[in-house]
View 1 (spheres, one colour):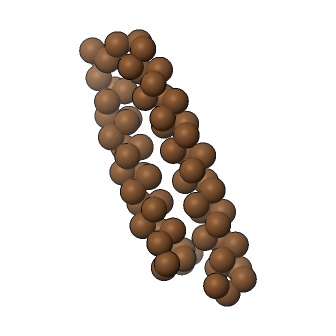
View 2 (cartoon, helix red, strand yellow):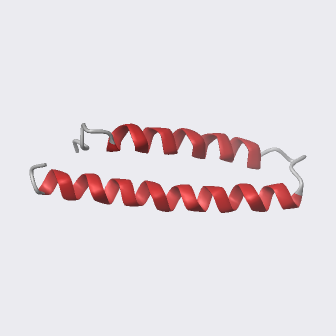
Length: 65
């Protein structure tokens, strides 16, 4: 699948990179519960944003734009 070369693929890569960072931090057993909750909320927001970017790229691809 080819994603929109205009920036969506870069945005998705950036989001994925941040999600990897959050996953690594969440994997640390010394992360306090409050910080873990904040990180999990951020991860959920990023997953939603990535889904929106993917949907947008697919719509643009389908429309030829």
